[in-house]
Length: 506
Image (cartoon, one colour):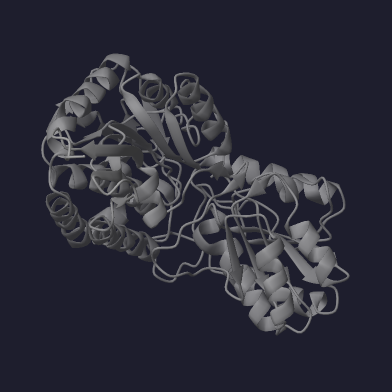
């Protein structure tokens, strides 16, 4: 994720909201509600956050963030529901998640339409994202029935076990760019292990986040899941509440650091998956057309707004020209437009603030000597559109190689050999994921061993089996990623030593 700044009077979480256009006569939808204690309650706050359409810049949503008193009510409801939910049999918790999964799957089309309207994501991929969220809820329901502890080899006259128990109240703070799987993964892991939850979706995808959270909450007993709409100020109030034992966040590195500092100061635990500046390294001997296809998928999917988007490209000089010819042609030929149109290949960025970041990074790179092979500019039309861009000759120190650009930009550096490319791919402040395209098994194994990132992908920019887990490194976060290890991280360990009250005869 990335943090951006923009004209708004509220604090940021994983990005700030854009201000309303002066004089616009549209009537945006008002989102002024929360789920607390199993009921939808009206928001009581006076502040407002106005979101603009990424497609045409018109005001679309007025969000009323929860204030400190409303956050306190939500945490209190979660705290009160803890004992009963903790004592619910794992099979009962799993059944509730299966019900939630079925409801999300049934409403995937509606959820996808909301995500597209909020963020500009292509409608087809938005709907698929909702279906993936349903799959994640279903998967957690099954995984949550697995082992919950272990027996120790102690004295034969006693019983020694290590058991896993829920933390208690868990705060789940999720991003805007892929909110359905991110929320489903964290919510499911927290809930199936017996925690109660206060969930704050991103203010940059308010309607989509609210709709998914409410669907899941409706499948659970009252108070098990609260959905609190709001911004950075709301999130800070949740994190600061002493009854919150664990904070699980997916979003920007800056927000993650702030959460870690605030929660850590009072002894709460933190799981966070944060920003990325993911590289792709193309080795000699790789088919240039296939390499270009992989780079384009990594750099342009969701308009480059994925934490695992390809943002740095290292090309072996033997095939660099051939790869760039195909990549630049692909970028120039992409159809950019309305994300609801099935023919559209690249939609807008989420808002003007993110568009400004992309434009500044590209302009600075060009000023420092990078060559534009395709794109390089915002498009002259309403909305937050930036042309799919290929930059050649990017060098160390450029923001396009060191900071999250989070846009449709492939920043290319040519390297003389695999070793040089591998060293560059492993450098930098982030450590989320990396991709290596190579025909060499030796180079593939070296990359898997050497790259200090959470996920190494060989010969495929996206993909992976269900149930995988990864720990992001450095600025990309800390704590277990998805899969069984995330469920383990949602619990705490307790050692129990049991002896009978009656002593055996000597």
